[in-house]
Length: 353
Image 1 (tube, one colour):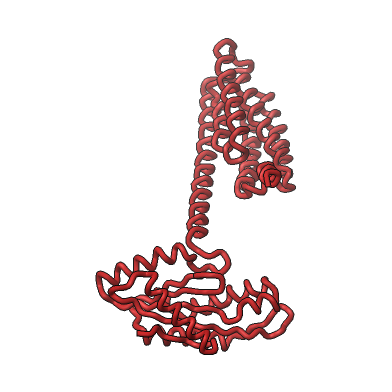
Image 2: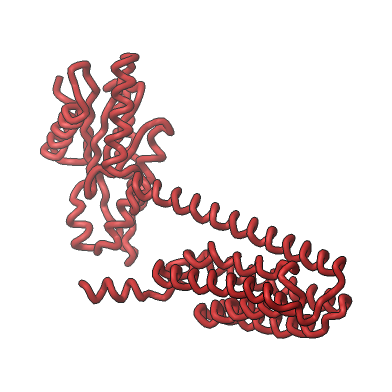
């Protein structure tokens, strides 16, 4: 078990953060485009060294992009790191701190904690901070090697500031979208059954309690259906668990199709489903359960081999009473379900008043 955890911890980053690598590819495209613009800009400003540095930078981004496409993510990240660190350092040393090339180093900060583990991210962050401070201190003691006119320096600064501003905006939007998507997935995982897409037992209990609280205030009727697939174990034994899972999915879909949108439906157990029907009396609930049962009979059930499977469903129906709680109302529907099983299955039974 410990070995499995260790292997999971060393699992390639690309498998755990696929969205990040798509953004990294987009950033390579944007950065390469910016470097092409820099090539012409520095030729115009009379700084040929920096102009030709951008040719090397574009090449590095192209190679990094191709590496990302081939899932060679470590190589790609290494190239991107090297390009930004060397390019920023050369820009500052050649034309000065006021050129704004140091801003590109700051873009690594949010990306560090997405692209690597915590320990590596912290170590990389300390290294980045040390490099940033070292560049700043160096420029206190030396003059730019290839200075440009103040107006041109201002133009370079504004260009760099605008690019970094745009890139930070893009990355912020990505991180916000990623967090929002992750939260949505977590909420769905916490409230739904992964196989059928119905509510899970825990969330159904919460929703049913809310519905019963409404009953206590308004007195509107609330009915319960407990539905169970007949001889489900035999289906698994004869046709395999894959066929059993497919049956559960399709039964869930049929139940949803036959009940109303305001009805609450959950996978309550292995092959058992619970439905809570607001504003529904006992007779109407019985009719709803019969509708579900007949829809299952009308459905064409075929195994993967093409062999027909006989799927039937038994159901028990109860109605919430003033002296009830959730467990007692469901227990009465359960007892009705047992009577339907004992009575030959493929039938709907009402609670005994």
